[in-house]
Image 1 (cartoon, rainbow, N blue to C red):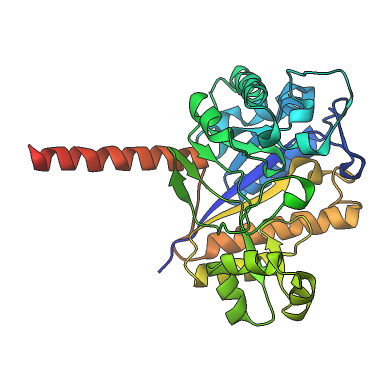
Image 2 (cartoon, helix red, strand yellow):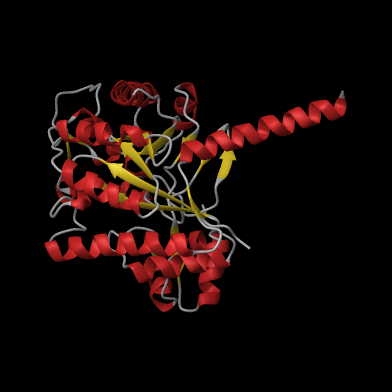
Length: 335
């Protein structure tokens, strides 16, 4: 029987209008008290939270308030990670306020600039928390060809930037359409994808898509892709209270468990804890629904027999310890 594990990842960032582009000047963080209340409730219900923090958040008064409040919980119920929004993260190479869409994805930056920005963010998080982060989440899920080398050079162990079954190439971002939710190790890094799930006209076909994402890729490459999506009722759900109900999140989790998935990442953006902080939460009614879905889901997940919650950094420690133990046993057997 599967023993499902849940990580809760909050994209801790500034408030800005997502529909109006990416501006260096948009660095306001005013939702600290609301975020503290939500994270406290998550912990009270048995959840563990990874705060993936970007530069404006960790540099703001409200962000530091959140960090100081949860420092006593670090390594138990809280992990401090990094989240790179390059348009608001120094160093900067020009004086233009608005950044091009393509360069809002960290992985599209020149390698040296991507390194310099993440280095500054890493050091800032270490300065504020006292701990060097080992878990990374690229802004807009934007990992690129230089990212792996940069992460390894800066001492990272975990990457959370993959969004399963997702294709951002239409906005000049990465293409993860052939990735499932499976945790995997490659090039010395542990990759824990943000959990998504495919829906379709029948559950059997949905299961096929989830287990064989190359089929999704072929459909997307077809000249009839729009028609096929409509006829086959293909959809993608994200494990998040942003735009998804408790019932939708529970159903997609149950269906993923049924096909063998064990690790799940529930995520949302920190400004969603206040009205108007993101496009997902435009009214007090929607905010109440957002919180209700989040808390109901955590309660339900924790009720599953054998389930647990985890921090990505702890997973890295366990895998390193397990590998060391295996090496010791092999060495003893050969001696």
